[in-house]
Amino acid sequence: MAIANDHQLRETAEKVSALIQEMQNYLGERNTEEGKIRFPYGFIRTAKHFRARIAFLDDHTLQSNIAYTLILSDVLRWALNRMHVVGTAREMLAKQIICVMGGIAESTTKHYLRGQVSTHAGYKARTAKLVEIGAINQELKEELDWLWDTRMNEHLFLVGDLEYQRYSVRESNRAVRAFKSLRESLETHHAATPK
Image 1: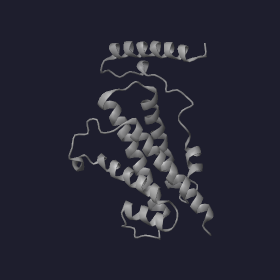
Image 2: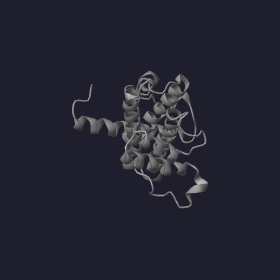
Image 3: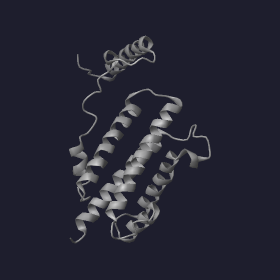
């Protein structure tokens, strides 16, 4: 029976949660094919979809690798949005989405500016160059620089503080929006740039 309203949705979620908990209680730490749950179709977008969104990058290998990483982002976002994960585990899911978006932004800016900045230019030098050439505005630069600063926390030896209660769904959404805005801005800039 298909779910027709929020009441049925809530009841279904409670049943599924109870069944998954029963499976976990039975399995404990053990792994088995019989205990795997099929990931639902319809949320994870395809590599082809993502490659089309970054067609302004003229390197098929880079397009594909970014597309594969965006597929990972879809999996992480599904877990964050569809599962009731709480506490530190939820925060670390949010952190991973931020790190993924930061890594993709890094590769995108580096490739987009090849030949226009030194190959050793840092990320923030590249976001400054993007503002200079009119590819992004200052507000987006600040968002991208926030994304980079936060992404650098994947290097745990650089963090220096406890990461407890440091990341949120709001920040992971901010990271996704920052990359989306970068992609849209570069797409527009690329289309307007004489070839």
